[in-house]
Every structure is written in C-alpha cells, then in structure tokens.
Image (tube, rainbow, N blue to C red; front, side):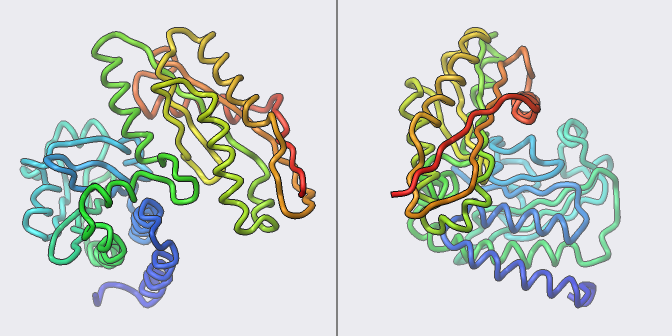
Length: 335
C-alpha cells in the first residue's frame, strides 16, 4: 500500500463510490472496475473472468483484452484457475519466460506481462480481474494492490447475487439493467459460439448494429423516462426479428442483433433495413415537449466475408455504422 500515491488512492476511492452507485448493474460494475484499474496502472487492457462451472468466461474486457469478451476457457491448468482455487494474486513479468502461462496463447493476443487478482465474496473466489501489458515489465508501483482494491469492491457488490446462486449471478451479469435485454457480454459470448461453429462448418452468420444519436441530450429532459424509451426501442427491434436472432444492448445508445438466418449479403441488408424501419415507424412518447433530434444509423457485417473473427466482424459493422451518409430520423411526440 505504501507504493500507492495519495492521488491514486483518492482516484480509487472515487471509483469505489462510483461502483456503489451502479447498484445491481453488475455488468457495469465489472466494466467500471476493470477499466479504472487499467487506467490507474497504465495497463494495455483488462478483463474480468467469471467462474462458471468448469470454465472461466470473459464477462468484461477493455483495451487489448476486448476481442476476448464472451470467450470460454477451461479453468483447469490456467493461471487464472490457480488464483481462483488458491484465492491469491499472481504476477507474470514476462510470458516468454514464465512456465505457468500458455506462451502460445499469450503470443496470439499480444500480451507479455499480467497481474491477476481474485474477486472473493463470502470466502469464495467467484472471478478474477486480469490486467495485461504488451511488453515485459517489473511491477513496483503498487499495480497489484490497485487492482485488488477495485476487485474487492466489485466482489462486495456481486456478493448478494452470488448468494442467490450462480444462475442469478449470471443473469445479473448478462442482462442489461435498463431494458432487460441481453447485454454486451452475453452478445459477444453468443457471437464467439456462432463464429466458432460457422468456422468449423463453413457456414455464414451476420450481425447488425444500430445507434440512436441524440439520446444523450434527451436524457437530461427525459429523466426516468429514458429507461422506458430504451425498452421501447429494443421491443420494436425484437418484434421485427426472426426466431434465433438475438437483440442486445451493446452500448449506452447502441443495440446489436445477431442474425441467425444470413446466407447472403442481400438478406442481411434487407433485414437491417426492416429493423430500422420498425424502430422509426412510430414516434417515441415523452411527457413533455423536447427539441432533441434523434437520428438512427445502422451498420451490418457478414461472416466470413467481412471478418473471420468476432472482433473483425464487429469492427466491420462499426465502420459501416460510423460512415457519413443518409440516416433516419426517429420522431418524438409529447402526450
């Protein structure tokens, strides 16, 4: 603890207060804890790996670790598994010389050093937080202590759900608090599964992404109504989707759909257009007049044409989503 500066300690306390304010939104708690730990330690990425049965699942990820979001890995014979079973932290200064780690796996994702700390609730390790760096390093600035302090607070907030059983904990970690739809973690978990299956079988799958611009300014006037607005948008999307499609909230004002029946690009484009039309078909209802202007943008990507991995596929859809071009207006009407 002596290695942590006063400014860093104050930042940790501020982050812990923020974590408490997130309440039952455990996915947001994990995201905030891991991203803050990465920021305060200068890590190139961070991930929270949750113990689920015989696997550890990447439930939160940022930076270098983000492409692994939703990934399942066997807990046995892993350094994360060691930290879980022994309820202790682990430091790897260089993955090229550390015999405890999978060297080829580290090379594949580009990491060379890492810190892993356990999240312990009621004397049970339920997850680990892992900070990763792209270069070997010695750890002398309290990085492990910073990660552990934030992991401890996240574990306290996860404790109640963990007491209710692993199914309740998983539900809290995979559903969006405001809309009740699957969240980014669950969506990427399903993408990892579908892409792996399509790669093995030579099949195809696709995703579509939808962003509503202007909701950030509307939140100031809509207040508690914002949750109802987001819920209505997600329900309009679900009604237009086919059996097997998955609608998820993957960002503050972003929704994504995994399209199960996507044999060719024309089908993907057509379905993305239909979902867009369903979103804008009727005005959103507010309790008061608003001058906010909402615009809907859409993007899509087809596997394997636009990307052979989950991260490449998502990035391809984001490129289309971010292009300047025609967008659709989403009308607002007061009671």
